[in-house]
Structures are given as C-alpha cells and as structure tokens.
Amino acid sequence: MPMRMIWGFFKGTLVLVTKGSKAYYAWVFTLLCFMGIGFLAYLYQLQHGLIVTAMRDQVSWGFYISNFTFLVGVAAAAVLLVIPAYVYHWKPLKEVAVLGEMLAVSAMVMCLLFVTVDIGRPDRFWHLIPKFGILNFPQSLLAWDVVVLNLYLVLNLTIAVFILYNLYHKREPNKAFTTPLLLFSIPAAVSIHTVTAFLYNGLAARPFWNASILAPRFLASAFCSGPALMIILFQVIRKYTRIEIKNEAIFKVAELIAYSMFINLFLLGAEVFKEFYSNTVHLAPLQYLLEGLKGHNDLVPYIWTAMIFNVSAFFLFLIPQTRENYVTLNIGCVLIIIGVYIEKGMGLVIPGLVPDVLGEIYEYSPTGIEILLTMGIWATGLFVYTLLLRVAVPILTGEFFVGEDGRTAVIVDTEFIRRADHLAEQSYRD
Image 1 (cartoon, rainbow, N blue to C red):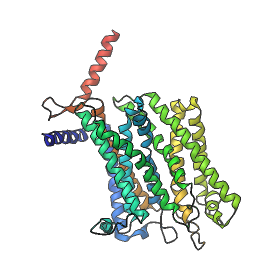
Image 2 (image 1 turned 135 degrees about the vertical axis):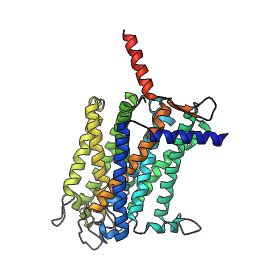
Image 3 (image 1 turned 90 degrees about the vertical axis):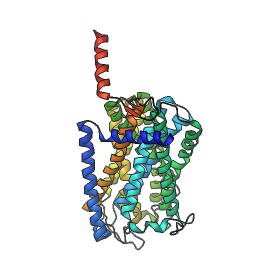
C-alpha cells in the first residue's frame, strides 16, 4: 500500500508538470532552449579543453567559480526562513518556508553543475568515491565541500518532498521527523558557506582571501542576496497562483536583509581599512580591485557599481517607509542581487588571483563559451525550481491531493475554481 500511494503521488506530479497554460509552456520551452545552448557549449569545452575559457595558469578560477560562490550563498539563505518559521514558530513565514527550501535545492543543483564544468576531466569524479577512490576526508577542505554541499542538497530535498507529500495526503507532517531535519538544516546552511569561505581563506599565498572575517562576510552577504531573490519570487508566486503570502512575511524578510547588509558593509569596511592603513605589499589585490594597478583597471567600474548598489539598497531596506513600499522594495532587491553578485563573484575571485604570486597581472574576462555555459546552468536551476513550484503550488492550495481510495491523485480544475470564485463574487455584489 505505501508504495502504491507513493506511485500515485509520483504519477500525479508527472501529470502536473506536463500540463499548464500557454505562458507556462513558453517559459519552459525558453528554459529548455537555453539549457540546450549551454549543453552544446559544454560539449565544445569538453572537446577542446579549458583553453576555450579565459582561465590560465595565473587565473585558474573564473566565471564558473564566481557563480558557484554566489549561489552557495543563495542556497544558505533558506535558513533565514527556517529560523523564524520553525524556531520561533512565526506563522506567516512558516506557511511559505517550503518555497525557500525548494530555492535552496535549485541553487545547490546549479552549484554542483558549476563545479562540474570547472573541472577539466569530470569523468574522473569516481576518484572521490570511497572504496573506488580516495575522498581524502577529513584532511582535504575540498572533500569537506563535497560532503556538505551534497548533504545540504539531500537534506533540503528530503524536507521539501516530505512536507509536500504529507500535505498531498491532507495531514500535518510528522514533527518528530521534520523538526530535527529543519533544525539540522540551520548549521548545515552555515556550514556550506563557511567551508566555501575556508577554501579561499586557507590559501595563505593569496592575501586578498587570507582574512579571518571572510567567512562571516560570506554569511552576511548570503543573507542579503538570497532573501532578496526570495522576495521577488514570493511576489511573482502570489500574483500568478492562489498561494497567499502575507505582506508581513515579505516585510519581515526585508527587515532581516537590512540587518545583514549592515554587517556585510561593516565587515567590508573593516577589511578595506586594515589593508589601506597598513599599506603593505598585501594591498596590491585590493588596490587592483578598487582603483586599478599599473594601468590595469578592468574590475574597477564593476566593483564600484556593486558598492553603490549595496549601500543604496541598505538605506532602502533600513527605512521602514521604503522597505514597506513595493516599488522601492523591489528596486532594493534588484540592487542587492546585482551588487552581491558582483561583489562575491568577479569582485572576490579575480582579485585573489591578480596579481599572482610572482607579481604578474593577467586581466581575466569570461569568453563567450563561459557566458553561454553559465546561462545554460542558470536556466537549469530555474527549470528545476519551475517544476518544483508546478507541483508545490497545487498541493499548498489544495488543488492536488489524494483521493478517497488513498491511492489516486486528484487534480482539481483550477480554471473551474477561478470561474466559480468570480461568479460567487458577482452574485455577492448583486
């Protein structure tokens, strides 16, 4: 019987993801096109090697790892919904926390894909599998990263699927199972970004990364960009589905962003002060980033744009009147997403490698192959989140549930519901 019930749920989800409006089909088709372009770009990279990218001996990490670092923060930001929802039992956020868990799953899928395309020989991944190869855990920080990233992906996917499966059966999820997992997801979220920071932080020959405040900076910026993306997604979901997401939930997330951005800017300022006031040879990477070095200044306009965006967004989120106005709120969210994307991406990876340990300056800029492949991976993440939403929304709104026989999935005609609601409202007015 349990296997039949699970199979009924699975068959119902397959029906859901294959049916939708014209806009849904157009969106999915667009994402599939970008995924196809990205896949072709990856095949080209596999055939010719990483020489088709702009990465060289001097700059061995580039656009792929920049996106990876940003997305690890987006995935970790799900904890910002879990803590008020399940630790403090704040109902407005508890109702939508599963949407954050699904965003974490999508972000982790993209993270793993970016790591895969950054490896010259991904076919040798089996060297990491215990018994077949050597994971070198716990000595290697890269091994720690492999463990925590995959663990966090499985953890969030398990939580989201278990909650949705129980709601599909119209019953409350078993707290004895979900509560420990949700509480464990809090340190797990912190760990994925902390280990990522330690990967940079542990390289003593790279003074730009070799700072003890790098891990808290990573977490602070993560709790800005991830929730900002959630706020925009919540508004889209609320507008185009029957899910009710209260204003107070969105405004609470915005308030938490303001605190996180203050910490992020403060830590950044402390690091800038330390380097410029000390004025040692270790100033060169930060100088290259902020004002250029020996005529090389490709990153300068980008990082100053990011800093202006982040400071502007901080004040928009700090003031209650602008934080609770959807026009300025959305402007602030866009500014934060772009600002943190630059700051934690190219603004973090490249200056750590330029100048290199021999003082050579190599100005890195992603090639067309890197950009196409990156677009394909982002499309894959959006595709995963779209499919998860396509299943989650009908369950959360009561339109997809198990039948009276306990096995058959029932999908309510949502168009009929909308018409009935409209007719009922008209009758009430008459």
